[in-house]
Length: 271
Length: 315
Image (cartoon, rainbow over the protein chains, first blue to last red):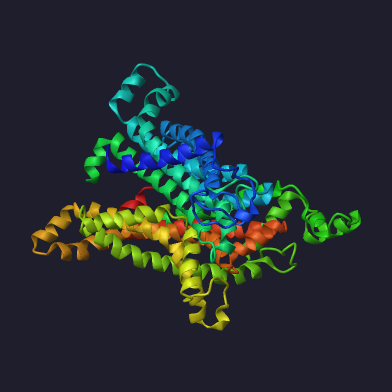
Protein backbone atom coordinates (compact mmCIF):
# COMPACT_ATOMS: atom_id res chain seq x y z
CA UNK A 1 0.00 0.00 0.00
CA UNK A 2 1.44 3.33 -1.00
CA UNK A 3 0.72 6.68 0.58
CA UNK A 4 -1.20 7.74 -2.55
CA UNK A 5 -3.44 4.71 -2.31
CA UNK A 6 -4.21 5.21 1.38
CA UNK A 7 -4.90 8.95 1.07
CA UNK A 8 -6.87 8.48 -2.15
CA UNK A 9 -8.99 5.68 -0.70
CA UNK A 10 -9.67 7.72 2.42
CA UNK A 11 -10.76 10.85 0.54
CA UNK A 12 -12.83 8.96 -2.03
CA UNK A 13 -14.62 6.83 0.55
CA UNK A 14 -15.38 9.96 2.57
CA UNK A 15 -17.22 11.44 -0.42
CA UNK A 16 -18.98 8.17 -1.23
CA UNK A 17 -20.00 7.84 2.39
CA UNK A 18 -21.34 11.40 2.50
CA UNK A 19 -23.41 10.71 -0.60
CA UNK A 20 -24.69 7.39 0.74
CA UNK A 21 -25.57 8.80 4.16
CA UNK A 22 -27.45 11.69 2.53
CA UNK A 23 -30.12 9.21 1.39
CA UNK A 24 -30.92 8.43 5.03
CA UNK A 25 -29.88 11.50 6.96
CA UNK A 26 -28.68 15.06 6.45
CA UNK A 27 -28.18 17.63 9.24
CA UNK A 28 -31.08 19.67 7.79
CA UNK A 29 -33.45 19.39 4.87
CA UNK A 30 -31.17 20.46 2.00
CA UNK A 31 -33.97 22.38 0.29
CA UNK A 32 -35.58 23.96 3.37
CA UNK A 33 -35.27 27.74 3.35
CA UNK A 34 -34.80 29.60 6.60
CA UNK A 35 -34.31 33.26 5.75
CA UNK A 36 -33.59 34.46 9.35
CA UNK A 37 -30.61 32.08 9.41
CA UNK A 38 -29.21 33.22 6.04
CA UNK A 39 -25.52 33.65 5.19
CA UNK A 40 -24.18 32.22 8.43
CA UNK A 41 -20.52 31.31 8.50
CA UNK A 42 -19.67 27.81 9.76
CA UNK A 43 -20.85 27.33 13.36
CA UNK A 44 -21.91 24.64 15.80
CA UNK A 45 -25.40 24.31 14.36
CA UNK A 46 -24.59 24.72 10.65
CA UNK A 47 -21.17 23.05 10.32
CA UNK A 48 -20.44 24.59 6.93
CA UNK A 49 -22.68 27.65 7.28
CA UNK A 50 -25.82 28.62 5.36
CA UNK A 51 -26.51 30.20 1.97
CA UNK A 52 -28.54 33.27 1.01
CA UNK A 53 -31.80 31.37 1.58
CA UNK A 54 -30.62 30.04 4.95
CA UNK A 55 -30.23 26.54 3.53
CA UNK A 56 -27.69 24.35 5.32
CA UNK A 57 -24.53 24.06 3.17
CA UNK A 58 -23.43 20.77 4.75
CA UNK A 59 -26.71 19.14 3.70
CA UNK A 60 -26.49 20.66 0.22
CA UNK A 61 -22.92 19.39 -0.19
CA UNK A 62 -23.94 15.90 0.90
CA UNK A 63 -26.88 15.73 -1.49
CA UNK A 64 -24.83 17.45 -4.22
CA UNK A 65 -22.25 14.67 -3.94
CA UNK A 66 -24.95 12.29 -5.22
CA UNK A 67 -25.39 14.35 -8.38
CA UNK A 68 -21.65 14.58 -9.01
CA UNK A 69 -21.07 10.88 -8.41
CA UNK A 70 -24.10 9.78 -10.42
CA UNK A 71 -23.21 11.93 -13.44
CA UNK A 72 -19.52 10.96 -13.43
CA UNK A 73 -20.23 7.27 -12.79
CA UNK A 74 -22.78 6.89 -15.58
CA UNK A 75 -20.52 8.86 -17.92
CA UNK A 76 -17.64 6.46 -17.18
CA UNK A 77 -20.09 3.59 -17.71
CA UNK A 78 -21.04 4.92 -21.14
CA UNK A 79 -17.38 5.44 -22.04
CA UNK A 80 -16.41 1.94 -20.93
CA UNK A 81 -19.51 0.22 -22.25
CA UNK A 82 -18.99 1.53 -25.76
CA UNK A 83 -15.25 2.21 -25.78
CA UNK A 84 -13.94 -1.13 -24.50
CA UNK A 85 -15.76 -3.35 -27.05
CA UNK A 86 -14.74 -0.96 -29.83
CA UNK A 87 -11.12 -1.07 -28.69
CA UNK A 88 -11.18 -4.87 -28.42
CA UNK A 89 -12.71 -5.19 -31.90
CA UNK A 90 -10.17 -2.79 -33.40
CA UNK A 91 -7.26 -4.72 -31.86
CA UNK A 92 -8.64 -8.10 -32.94
CA UNK A 93 -8.82 -6.88 -36.54
CA UNK A 94 -5.70 -4.75 -36.53
CA UNK A 95 -5.14 -2.86 -39.78
CA UNK A 96 -8.50 -3.84 -41.23
CA UNK A 97 -11.14 -1.38 -42.40
CA UNK A 98 -12.94 -1.93 -39.08
CA UNK A 99 -9.85 -0.88 -37.11
CA UNK A 100 -9.38 2.10 -39.39
CA UNK A 101 -13.04 3.11 -39.09
CA UNK A 102 -13.04 2.85 -35.29
CA UNK A 103 -9.82 4.79 -34.87
CA UNK A 104 -10.81 7.54 -37.32
CA UNK A 105 -14.17 7.77 -35.59
CA UNK A 106 -12.29 8.18 -32.32
CA UNK A 107 -10.19 10.98 -33.75
CA UNK A 108 -13.36 12.70 -34.81
CA UNK A 109 -14.96 12.47 -31.36
CA UNK A 110 -11.71 13.72 -29.83
CA UNK A 111 -12.07 16.87 -31.89
CA UNK A 112 -15.19 17.72 -29.86
CA UNK A 113 -14.12 18.64 -26.32
CA UNK A 114 -16.80 17.58 -23.80
CA UNK A 115 -17.80 21.19 -23.30
CA UNK A 116 -18.44 21.56 -27.02
CA UNK A 117 -20.50 18.35 -27.08
CA UNK A 118 -22.45 19.70 -24.11
CA UNK A 119 -23.11 22.98 -25.90
CA UNK A 120 -24.37 21.12 -28.97
CA UNK A 121 -26.59 18.81 -26.93
CA UNK A 122 -27.97 21.67 -24.87
CA UNK A 123 -28.72 23.65 -27.98
CA UNK A 124 -30.73 20.71 -29.26
CA UNK A 125 -32.27 19.03 -26.21
CA UNK A 126 -31.98 21.68 -23.51
CA UNK A 127 -29.89 21.73 -20.33
CA UNK A 128 -30.07 19.00 -17.70
CA UNK A 129 -28.13 16.40 -15.75
CA UNK A 130 -28.97 13.64 -18.24
CA UNK A 131 -27.64 15.68 -21.14
CA UNK A 132 -24.48 16.44 -19.15
CA UNK A 133 -24.03 12.69 -18.65
CA UNK A 134 -24.40 12.09 -22.39
CA UNK A 135 -21.89 14.83 -23.22
CA UNK A 136 -19.24 13.59 -20.79
CA UNK A 137 -19.98 9.96 -21.69
CA UNK A 138 -19.54 10.49 -25.43
CA UNK A 139 -16.22 12.18 -24.76
CA UNK A 140 -15.13 9.16 -22.66
CA UNK A 141 -15.73 6.62 -25.45
CA UNK A 142 -12.57 7.30 -27.49
CA UNK A 143 -10.50 7.49 -24.31
CA UNK A 144 -11.42 3.92 -23.40
CA UNK A 145 -11.37 2.66 -26.99
CA UNK A 146 -7.83 3.95 -27.48
CA UNK A 147 -6.41 2.61 -24.24
CA UNK A 148 -8.09 -0.80 -24.73
CA UNK A 149 -6.84 -1.11 -28.28
CA UNK A 150 -3.30 -0.15 -27.31
CA UNK A 151 -3.09 -2.67 -24.50
CA UNK A 152 -4.90 -5.39 -26.46
CA UNK A 153 -2.57 -5.04 -29.45
CA UNK A 154 0.48 -5.97 -27.40
CA UNK A 155 -1.42 -8.87 -25.81
CA UNK A 156 -2.33 -10.32 -29.21
CA UNK A 157 1.40 -10.91 -29.83
CA UNK A 158 1.76 -13.06 -26.71
CA UNK A 159 2.13 -16.84 -26.67
CA UNK A 160 -0.91 -17.59 -24.54
CA UNK A 161 -3.11 -15.92 -27.16
CA UNK A 162 -1.45 -18.02 -29.84
CA UNK A 163 -2.22 -21.09 -27.70
CA UNK A 164 -5.87 -20.03 -27.49
CA UNK A 165 -6.00 -19.61 -31.27
CA UNK A 166 -4.45 -23.01 -31.79
CA UNK A 167 -7.13 -24.38 -29.47
CA UNK A 168 -9.65 -23.10 -32.00
CA UNK A 169 -11.08 -20.09 -30.23
CA UNK A 170 -12.35 -17.24 -32.38
CA UNK A 171 -11.32 -13.61 -32.10
CA UNK A 172 -14.42 -12.61 -30.16
CA UNK A 173 -14.01 -15.37 -27.62
CA UNK A 174 -10.30 -14.68 -27.17
CA UNK A 175 -11.05 -11.00 -26.68
CA UNK A 176 -13.63 -11.73 -24.01
CA UNK A 177 -11.86 -14.57 -22.21
CA UNK A 178 -8.18 -13.67 -22.46
CA UNK A 179 -7.68 -10.06 -23.56
CA UNK A 180 -10.33 -8.37 -21.43
CA UNK A 181 -9.21 -9.81 -18.05
CA UNK A 182 -5.67 -8.73 -18.83
CA UNK A 183 -6.56 -5.13 -19.64
CA UNK A 184 -8.93 -4.86 -16.67
CA UNK A 185 -6.35 -3.31 -14.33
CA UNK A 186 -5.56 -0.63 -16.86
CA UNK A 187 -9.27 0.08 -17.34
CA UNK A 188 -9.86 0.39 -13.60
CA UNK A 189 -7.05 2.94 -13.30
CA UNK A 190 -8.26 4.89 -16.31
CA UNK A 191 -11.82 4.63 -15.05
CA UNK A 192 -10.79 6.30 -11.78
CA UNK A 193 -9.12 9.14 -13.68
CA UNK A 194 -12.08 9.63 -16.04
CA UNK A 195 -14.34 9.56 -12.99
CA UNK A 196 -12.46 12.50 -11.49
CA UNK A 197 -12.49 14.35 -14.82
CA UNK A 198 -16.22 13.67 -15.01
CA UNK A 199 -16.76 15.32 -11.63
CA UNK A 200 -14.81 18.38 -12.80
CA UNK A 201 -16.75 18.46 -16.08
CA UNK A 202 -20.12 18.15 -14.34
CA UNK A 203 -19.21 21.01 -12.01
CA UNK A 204 -18.16 23.16 -14.97
CA UNK A 205 -21.29 22.39 -16.98
CA UNK A 206 -23.58 23.03 -14.02
CA UNK A 207 -21.71 26.25 -13.30
CA UNK A 208 -22.50 27.65 -16.76
CA UNK A 209 -26.06 26.35 -16.51
CA UNK A 210 -25.74 23.44 -18.94
CA UNK A 211 -25.79 20.74 -16.25
CA UNK A 212 -28.11 19.83 -13.38
CA UNK A 213 -31.09 22.18 -13.13
CA UNK A 214 -32.84 23.34 -9.95
CA UNK A 215 -34.03 21.81 -7.68
CA UNK A 216 -31.36 19.09 -8.17
CA UNK A 217 -28.52 20.17 -5.89
CA UNK A 218 -25.15 20.37 -7.60
CA UNK A 219 -21.74 21.64 -6.52
CA UNK A 220 -21.24 23.51 -9.77
CA UNK A 221 -24.52 25.38 -9.43
CA UNK A 222 -23.78 26.21 -5.80
CA UNK A 223 -20.65 27.94 -7.12
CA UNK A 224 -22.65 29.78 -9.76
CA UNK A 225 -25.06 31.00 -7.06
CA UNK A 226 -22.13 32.03 -4.86
CA UNK A 227 -20.50 34.15 -7.54
CA UNK A 228 -22.43 37.36 -6.89
CA UNK A 229 -22.04 37.00 -3.12
CA UNK A 230 -18.39 36.04 -2.94
CA UNK A 231 -17.34 39.51 -1.72
CA UNK A 232 -19.39 39.37 1.48
CA UNK A 233 -19.88 35.61 1.93
CA UNK A 234 -16.74 33.88 0.62
CA UNK A 235 -17.64 30.62 2.41
CA UNK A 236 -20.41 30.10 -0.16
CA UNK A 237 -17.71 29.62 -2.81
CA UNK A 238 -15.08 28.04 -0.56
CA UNK A 239 -17.26 25.16 0.65
CA UNK A 240 -18.37 23.67 -2.72
CA UNK A 241 -14.93 24.45 -4.17
CA UNK A 242 -13.18 22.47 -1.46
CA UNK A 243 -15.69 19.63 -1.91
CA UNK A 244 -14.81 19.42 -5.62
CA UNK A 245 -11.06 19.73 -5.03
CA UNK A 246 -10.94 17.08 -2.30
CA UNK A 247 -13.04 14.66 -4.36
CA UNK A 248 -10.99 15.09 -7.52
CA UNK A 249 -7.71 15.01 -5.60
CA UNK A 250 -8.82 11.84 -3.80
CA UNK A 251 -9.80 10.09 -7.04
CA UNK A 252 -6.57 11.10 -8.77
CA UNK A 253 -4.48 9.84 -5.85
CA UNK A 254 -6.55 6.66 -5.87
CA UNK A 255 -5.88 6.23 -9.60
CA UNK A 256 -2.13 6.77 -9.15
CA UNK A 257 -2.06 4.48 -6.13
CA UNK A 258 -4.03 1.74 -7.89
CA UNK A 259 -1.72 1.91 -10.89
CA UNK A 260 1.31 1.37 -8.68
CA UNK A 261 -0.45 -1.30 -6.65
CA UNK A 262 -1.86 -3.29 -9.59
CA UNK A 263 1.23 -3.06 -11.76
CA UNK A 264 4.47 -3.67 -9.86
CA UNK A 265 6.46 -3.31 -13.09
CA UNK A 266 5.39 0.32 -13.39
CA UNK A 267 6.41 0.96 -9.81
CA UNK A 268 9.97 -0.05 -10.62
CA UNK A 269 9.97 1.85 -13.90
CA UNK A 270 8.70 5.03 -12.30
CA UNK A 271 10.99 4.95 -9.26
CA UNK B 1 7.76 14.30 -46.52
CA UNK B 2 5.60 15.89 -49.21
CA UNK B 3 3.70 12.64 -49.66
CA UNK B 4 3.12 12.40 -45.92
CA UNK B 5 1.98 16.03 -45.74
CA UNK B 6 -0.45 15.57 -48.64
CA UNK B 7 -1.86 12.43 -47.08
CA UNK B 8 -2.38 14.18 -43.76
CA UNK B 9 -3.89 17.18 -45.54
CA UNK B 10 -6.40 14.93 -47.26
CA UNK B 11 -7.41 13.37 -43.96
CA UNK B 12 -7.65 16.88 -42.47
CA UNK B 13 -10.21 17.88 -45.08
CA UNK B 14 -12.06 14.61 -44.64
CA UNK B 15 -12.25 15.10 -40.86
CA UNK B 16 -13.48 18.66 -41.30
CA UNK B 17 -16.13 17.56 -43.79
CA UNK B 18 -17.38 14.76 -41.53
CA UNK B 19 -17.31 17.02 -38.46
CA UNK B 20 -19.33 19.70 -40.23
CA UNK B 21 -21.86 17.09 -41.35
CA UNK B 22 -22.17 15.75 -37.79
CA UNK B 23 -22.68 19.24 -36.36
CA UNK B 24 -25.24 20.12 -39.01
CA UNK B 25 -27.21 16.90 -38.51
CA UNK B 26 -27.18 17.21 -34.71
CA UNK B 27 -28.49 20.76 -34.86
CA UNK B 28 -30.99 19.77 -37.55
CA UNK B 29 -32.79 17.38 -35.23
CA UNK B 30 -33.31 20.22 -32.75
CA UNK B 31 -36.99 20.59 -31.98
CA UNK B 32 -38.57 23.95 -32.64
CA UNK B 33 -38.56 26.10 -35.73
CA UNK B 34 -36.33 29.19 -35.47
CA UNK B 35 -38.78 31.22 -37.55
CA UNK B 36 -41.80 30.56 -35.32
CA UNK B 37 -39.60 31.08 -32.24
CA UNK B 38 -38.52 34.51 -33.50
CA UNK B 39 -42.02 35.66 -34.36
CA UNK B 40 -43.67 34.44 -31.16
CA UNK B 41 -46.83 32.41 -30.58
CA UNK B 42 -49.27 34.83 -32.21
CA UNK B 43 -47.56 34.91 -35.60
CA UNK B 44 -49.62 34.23 -38.74
CA UNK B 45 -48.67 31.12 -40.73
CA UNK B 46 -47.92 33.17 -43.84
CA UNK B 47 -45.58 35.47 -41.88
CA UNK B 48 -43.73 32.43 -40.59
CA UNK B 49 -43.53 30.99 -44.08
CA UNK B 50 -42.16 34.28 -45.42
CA UNK B 51 -39.50 34.40 -42.70
CA UNK B 52 -38.61 30.76 -43.31
CA UNK B 53 -38.08 31.56 -46.97
CA UNK B 54 -35.99 34.59 -46.06
CA UNK B 55 -33.78 32.54 -43.71
CA UNK B 56 -33.50 29.79 -46.30
CA UNK B 57 -35.25 27.30 -44.01
CA UNK B 58 -37.68 26.20 -46.71
CA UNK B 59 -34.96 24.48 -48.71
CA UNK B 60 -34.11 20.81 -48.37
CA UNK B 61 -31.64 19.58 -45.76
CA UNK B 62 -28.93 18.71 -48.26
CA UNK B 63 -29.21 22.07 -50.02
CA UNK B 64 -28.99 23.88 -46.70
CA UNK B 65 -25.96 21.87 -45.62
CA UNK B 66 -24.19 22.56 -48.89
CA UNK B 67 -25.02 26.27 -48.68
CA UNK B 68 -23.74 26.41 -45.11
CA UNK B 69 -20.56 24.42 -45.80
CA UNK B 70 -19.75 26.26 -49.02
CA UNK B 71 -20.41 29.57 -47.31
CA UNK B 72 -17.99 28.74 -44.51
CA UNK B 73 -15.28 27.92 -47.01
CA UNK B 74 -15.58 31.45 -48.36
CA UNK B 75 -15.81 33.00 -44.88
CA UNK B 76 -19.59 33.47 -44.99
CA UNK B 77 -21.10 31.78 -41.92
CA UNK B 78 -24.65 32.85 -42.74
CA UNK B 79 -26.89 35.39 -41.03
CA UNK B 80 -27.82 35.29 -37.36
CA UNK B 81 -31.53 34.50 -36.85
CA UNK B 82 -31.89 36.94 -33.94
CA UNK B 83 -29.51 39.78 -34.76
CA UNK B 84 -29.89 39.67 -38.55
CA UNK B 85 -26.17 40.39 -38.90
CA UNK B 86 -23.54 38.19 -40.53
CA UNK B 87 -22.43 35.45 -38.12
CA UNK B 88 -18.84 35.73 -39.35
CA UNK B 89 -18.64 39.33 -38.13
CA UNK B 90 -20.14 38.47 -34.74
CA UNK B 91 -17.67 35.62 -34.29
CA UNK B 92 -14.73 37.73 -35.42
CA UNK B 93 -15.56 40.41 -32.81
CA UNK B 94 -15.73 37.82 -30.03
CA UNK B 95 -12.66 35.99 -31.26
CA UNK B 96 -10.66 39.13 -30.55
CA UNK B 97 -11.29 38.44 -26.87
CA UNK B 98 -11.22 34.64 -26.74
CA UNK B 99 -8.16 34.11 -28.93
CA UNK B 100 -5.85 36.55 -27.09
CA UNK B 101 -7.11 35.08 -23.82
CA UNK B 102 -6.22 31.53 -24.93
CA UNK B 103 -2.81 32.66 -26.21
CA UNK B 104 -2.12 34.61 -23.02
CA UNK B 105 -3.01 31.55 -20.94
CA UNK B 106 -0.86 29.31 -23.14
CA UNK B 107 2.11 31.64 -22.66
CA UNK B 108 1.62 31.72 -18.90
CA UNK B 109 1.23 27.95 -18.60
CA UNK B 110 4.42 27.42 -20.65
CA UNK B 111 6.32 29.99 -18.59
CA UNK B 112 5.29 28.20 -15.38
CA UNK B 113 5.62 24.62 -16.60
CA UNK B 114 9.06 24.73 -18.20
CA UNK B 115 11.06 25.84 -15.15
CA UNK B 116 8.90 23.78 -12.79
CA UNK B 117 9.22 20.61 -14.87
CA UNK B 118 12.97 20.99 -15.39
CA UNK B 119 13.46 21.75 -11.70
CA UNK B 120 11.47 18.68 -10.65
CA UNK B 121 13.29 16.38 -13.09
CA UNK B 122 16.69 17.64 -12.00
CA UNK B 123 15.80 16.92 -8.35
CA UNK B 124 13.97 13.65 -8.88
CA UNK B 125 12.87 12.08 -5.59
CA UNK B 126 14.13 15.00 -3.50
CA UNK B 127 11.87 17.33 -1.49
CA UNK B 128 11.88 19.95 -4.29
CA UNK B 129 10.53 17.38 -6.76
CA UNK B 130 7.91 16.17 -4.30
CA UNK B 131 6.75 19.74 -3.64
CA UNK B 132 6.35 20.42 -7.36
CA UNK B 133 4.55 17.12 -7.95
CA UNK B 134 2.26 17.77 -4.97
CA UNK B 135 1.47 21.18 -6.39
CA UNK B 136 0.61 19.67 -9.78
CA UNK B 137 -1.70 17.11 -8.10
CA UNK B 138 -3.53 20.03 -6.55
CA UNK B 139 -3.39 22.01 -9.80
CA UNK B 140 -5.26 19.38 -11.82
CA UNK B 141 -7.88 18.98 -9.06
CA UNK B 142 -8.84 22.66 -8.87
CA UNK B 143 -11.73 23.64 -11.18
CA UNK B 144 -10.45 26.64 -13.11
CA UNK B 145 -13.68 28.63 -12.74
CA UNK B 146 -13.50 28.23 -8.95
CA UNK B 147 -9.87 29.33 -9.00
CA UNK B 148 -11.03 32.31 -11.08
CA UNK B 149 -13.57 33.26 -8.40
CA UNK B 150 -10.86 33.08 -5.74
CA UNK B 151 -8.59 35.30 -7.86
CA UNK B 152 -11.40 37.83 -8.15
CA UNK B 153 -11.98 37.70 -4.39
CA UNK B 154 -8.31 38.24 -3.55
CA UNK B 155 -6.92 40.43 -6.31
CA UNK B 156 -9.99 42.35 -7.47
CA UNK B 157 -12.21 42.73 -4.41
CA UNK B 158 -9.69 42.78 -1.55
CA UNK B 159 -6.47 44.11 -3.07
CA UNK B 160 -8.13 46.04 -5.94
CA UNK B 161 -5.21 45.37 -8.29
CA UNK B 162 -7.51 44.28 -11.10
CA UNK B 163 -11.09 44.82 -12.17
CA UNK B 164 -13.52 42.07 -11.17
CA UNK B 165 -14.59 41.56 -14.77
CA UNK B 166 -15.51 43.13 -18.05
CA UNK B 167 -13.31 44.08 -20.95
CA UNK B 168 -12.50 47.64 -22.06
CA UNK B 169 -11.81 46.59 -25.66
CA UNK B 170 -8.51 46.77 -27.51
CA UNK B 171 -9.31 50.37 -28.52
CA UNK B 172 -8.56 51.35 -24.91
CA UNK B 173 -4.97 50.31 -25.50
CA UNK B 174 -3.01 47.09 -25.51
CA UNK B 175 -1.96 47.37 -21.86
CA UNK B 176 -5.42 47.92 -20.41
CA UNK B 177 -6.70 45.07 -22.58
CA UNK B 178 -4.00 42.73 -21.29
CA UNK B 179 -4.60 43.97 -17.75
CA UNK B 180 -8.27 42.96 -18.00
CA UNK B 181 -7.31 39.54 -19.36
CA UNK B 182 -4.64 38.81 -16.74
CA UNK B 183 -6.78 37.19 -14.04
CA UNK B 184 -8.79 35.11 -16.56
CA UNK B 185 -5.57 33.97 -18.21
CA UNK B 186 -4.04 32.94 -14.86
CA UNK B 187 -7.17 30.97 -13.98
CA UNK B 188 -7.20 29.27 -17.36
CA UNK B 189 -3.46 28.56 -17.28
CA UNK B 190 -3.28 26.89 -13.87
CA UNK B 191 -4.58 23.38 -14.62
CA UNK B 192 -2.82 23.35 -17.98
CA UNK B 193 0.45 24.37 -16.32
CA UNK B 194 0.08 21.47 -13.87
CA UNK B 195 -0.39 18.99 -16.72
CA UNK B 196 2.44 20.48 -18.77
CA UNK B 197 4.81 20.40 -15.78
CA UNK B 198 4.16 16.67 -15.43
CA UNK B 199 4.74 16.07 -19.14
CA UNK B 200 7.96 18.11 -19.08
CA UNK B 201 9.22 16.24 -16.03
CA UNK B 202 8.48 12.76 -17.34
CA UNK B 203 9.84 13.56 -20.81
CA UNK B 204 13.07 14.76 -19.20
CA UNK B 205 13.26 11.71 -16.95
CA UNK B 206 12.88 9.44 -20.00
CA UNK B 207 15.70 11.23 -21.71
CA UNK B 208 18.02 11.24 -18.70
CA UNK B 209 18.30 7.46 -19.09
CA UNK B 210 19.36 7.65 -22.76
CA UNK B 211 22.84 6.67 -23.95
CA UNK B 212 23.60 10.09 -25.38
CA UNK B 213 23.08 11.61 -21.94
CA UNK B 214 25.67 9.24 -20.51
CA UNK B 215 27.99 10.20 -23.37
CA UNK B 216 27.44 13.86 -22.58
CA UNK B 217 28.34 13.23 -18.96
CA UNK B 218 31.33 11.09 -19.97
CA UNK B 219 32.80 13.83 -22.10
CA UNK B 220 32.92 15.98 -19.00
CA UNK B 221 29.66 17.93 -18.83
CA UNK B 222 28.20 18.42 -15.39
CA UNK B 223 24.74 17.03 -14.68
CA UNK B 224 23.26 20.48 -15.09
CA UNK B 225 25.07 21.20 -18.36
CA UNK B 226 24.02 17.86 -19.82
CA UNK B 227 20.45 18.45 -18.72
CA UNK B 228 20.22 21.86 -20.33
CA UNK B 229 22.18 21.24 -23.53
CA UNK B 230 20.92 17.79 -24.45
CA UNK B 231 18.05 16.89 -22.14
CA UNK B 232 15.73 19.88 -22.44
CA UNK B 233 16.16 20.16 -26.18
CA UNK B 234 15.12 16.54 -26.73
CA UNK B 235 12.29 16.70 -24.23
CA UNK B 236 10.79 19.56 -26.22
CA UNK B 237 9.33 17.21 -28.85
CA UNK B 238 6.65 15.57 -26.65
CA UNK B 239 6.17 18.81 -24.73
CA UNK B 240 5.42 20.79 -27.90
CA UNK B 241 2.84 18.18 -28.88
CA UNK B 242 1.01 18.70 -25.61
CA UNK B 243 1.24 22.48 -25.95
CA UNK B 244 -0.41 22.19 -29.35
CA UNK B 245 -3.21 20.06 -27.94
CA UNK B 246 -3.65 22.39 -24.99
CA UNK B 247 -4.33 25.35 -27.19
CA UNK B 248 -7.63 23.96 -28.39
CA UNK B 249 -8.62 23.04 -24.84
CA UNK B 250 -7.77 26.55 -23.72
CA UNK B 251 -9.97 28.00 -26.44
CA UNK B 252 -12.87 25.81 -25.32
CA UNK B 253 -12.06 26.35 -21.64
CA UNK B 254 -12.13 30.10 -22.22
CA UNK B 255 -15.90 29.74 -22.74
CA UNK B 256 -16.39 28.92 -19.04
CA UNK B 257 -13.82 31.38 -17.70
CA UNK B 258 -15.42 34.17 -19.74
CA UNK B 259 -18.60 33.63 -17.72
CA UNK B 260 -16.74 34.29 -14.45
CA UNK B 261 -15.27 37.57 -15.68
CA UNK B 262 -18.19 38.71 -17.86
CA UNK B 263 -15.90 38.85 -20.88
CA UNK B 264 -17.57 39.46 -24.25
CA UNK B 265 -15.97 36.42 -25.90
CA UNK B 266 -17.16 33.36 -27.80
CA UNK B 267 -18.59 31.91 -24.58
CA UNK B 268 -21.03 34.75 -24.03
CA UNK B 269 -22.00 34.61 -27.70
CA UNK B 270 -22.72 30.90 -27.65
CA UNK B 271 -24.77 30.99 -24.42
CA UNK B 272 -26.86 33.91 -25.69
CA UNK B 273 -27.35 32.05 -28.95
CA UNK B 274 -28.49 28.91 -27.12
CA UNK B 275 -31.08 30.78 -25.08
CA UNK B 276 -32.47 32.59 -28.12
CA UNK B 277 -32.34 29.42 -30.27
CA UNK B 278 -30.03 31.16 -32.71
CA UNK B 279 -28.86 27.78 -33.94
CA UNK B 280 -26.81 29.02 -36.86
CA UNK B 281 -24.56 30.89 -34.41
CA UNK B 282 -24.22 27.80 -32.16
CA UNK B 283 -23.45 25.69 -35.22
CA UNK B 284 -20.78 28.10 -36.42
CA UNK B 285 -19.06 28.57 -33.05
CA UNK B 286 -18.94 24.82 -32.50
CA UNK B 287 -17.60 24.31 -36.02
CA UNK B 288 -14.95 26.94 -35.38
CA UNK B 289 -13.80 25.24 -32.15
CA UNK B 290 -13.72 21.84 -33.82
CA UNK B 291 -11.86 23.35 -36.76
CA UNK B 292 -9.28 24.74 -34.31
CA UNK B 293 -8.79 21.35 -32.64
CA UNK B 294 -8.46 19.42 -35.91
CA UNK B 295 -6.18 21.98 -37.53
CA UNK B 296 -3.87 22.31 -34.53
CA UNK B 297 -3.60 18.50 -34.35
CA UNK B 298 -2.72 18.47 -38.03
CA UNK B 299 -0.03 21.12 -37.57
CA UNK B 300 1.40 19.29 -34.56
CA UNK B 301 1.55 16.03 -36.54
CA UNK B 302 3.30 17.84 -39.35
CA UNK B 303 5.81 19.54 -37.05
CA UNK B 304 6.44 16.21 -35.37
CA UNK B 305 7.21 14.52 -38.70
CA UNK B 306 9.46 17.40 -39.64
CA UNK B 307 11.50 16.93 -36.45
CA UNK B 308 11.44 13.14 -36.36
CA UNK B 309 11.72 11.51 -39.80
CA UNK B 310 10.88 8.06 -38.41
CA UNK B 311 7.27 9.12 -37.96
CA UNK B 312 6.74 9.86 -41.65
CA UNK B 313 6.60 6.21 -42.64
CA UNK B 314 4.06 5.37 -39.95
CA UNK B 315 0.92 6.23 -41.85
